[in-house]
Image 1: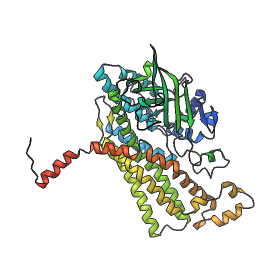
Image 2 (image 1 turned 90 degrees about the horizontal axis):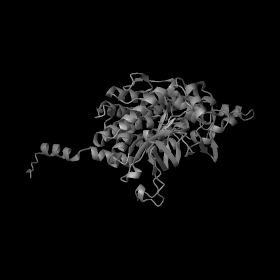
Image 3 (image 1 turned 120 degrees about the horizontal axis):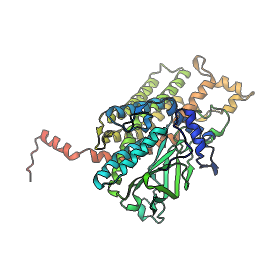
Image 4 (image 1 turned 180 degrees about the horizontal axis):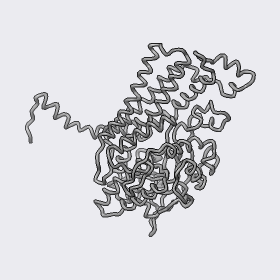
Amino acid sequence: MAKIMTIKKPLGTANDYRQSLRDMKTAIWAFGEKITNVPDHPLFIPHVNAVAKTYEVNNPATSHLTGKTINRFNHIHQSVDDLVKKVKFLRTINQLTACCIQRCAGQDALNATYVVTYEIDQKYGTNYHERFKKFMTYLQEYNLVTIGAMTDVKGDRSKKPNQQADPDLFVHVVEERKDGVVVRGAKAHLTGVSGAHQVIVFMREDSKDYSIVFSCPVNTPGITYIFGRQSNDTRKLEKGDIDKGNAEFACVGGECVAIFDNVFIPWEDVFMYKEYDFAGMFVEAFASAHRQNYGACKGGIADVLLGATYGIIKANGLTNASHIRDKVADMINMTETLYAGSLACSYEGHKTPSGAFVADTMLANITKHNTTKFVYELNRLSHDICGGLLATLPSEADLRHPEIGPKLEKALAGAAGITAEEKMRLLRLVDNISGGTACVEAMHGAGPPQSQRIMMLRDAKLEGKLKLAEKLAGIKKDKK
């Protein structure tokens, strides 16, 4: 197994975790600069802090592989209760960070791989499942962070991966060796590279060379990461903390484009290769697991958005205004509806042949589809309530300036003794949570709305529903 040799002992604390990232020296390109001191660079510190929170506020689980206590983000769900605990913990930790904590895609990829490798072995007599259980034991023992590389860069969307003008656009095998394979290609939107130890890569295609699932350390030679721009990202590089909005934690997950250039993967880290008839199952297993999360994580962030918005309401002296209360009630309704979706698909989960439990596919897709709409509406209502100052607020430097600062303090002070600084901090937090990058992630993370509609229509069993209606309507058809 391709272990990260710089990690010599299990990670027990947030400080252990941060030091492990320093030891790895993973390089990420950002703004034309190659950065290797990732956990100590101001551009990445908020992202690392979010993951570190999962070491500080853990919700432990018991490994079904070893019987040991492990981090829940490295757990293979063994019951409906595990599925429910997952979403409850996600809401809690998002309430504490108001941002993406970057471990969900990895956790969901691990659970999907566990389920599907068992199925492949049952059909073909392969040993993927045993390989993967060894990998899981390693992750659990060392308490490592795994991220998922799911999304392709697409290229010409009218053509399949093996039909592209550039054959190396999509990740695929270019060489088979006795001890492993060599891969080339690219992946987009990798959440959490700045804070991860391992990456698990999914590919789907009806061409054997393009059908592969594997894992590797994020600092594996041959992988280039290029950081994606985010709304207000350069504010992380400024002095002070007010204008950052959420100074300790990031807005979203620090997504990167990853380019694999002749990357060697040992056979022991390959969990599917050429069994392309299972590629769709991999994608669906991951998608359902990941869409299960969204009502919980976005619900936790919405709790903070509601709190900040309510703070502005108090600063404006409008706590008793009926039209404001109606908008807040709408925000509460959407927040709890999102969370209810995550809980519902978890409570309706079921056991797979592998023994692992998965969420209900239909309800998970409904949850994510609601997220693509409700997050925008939550943000719209917050913007409506907060007013135009949200868009025209002066900088922290102006507030701190000896000449104009006192003028701002007087002009921007709120009701009931709420200071200008308090008001500015709340508005910047709303700005951070409800910015453009966060909205796009809510729309496209775990797949855009159309991908959920496809699965919803497939799982709706409309012909069966028609038969229910026909029976009640008294329509009788001769069986042929």
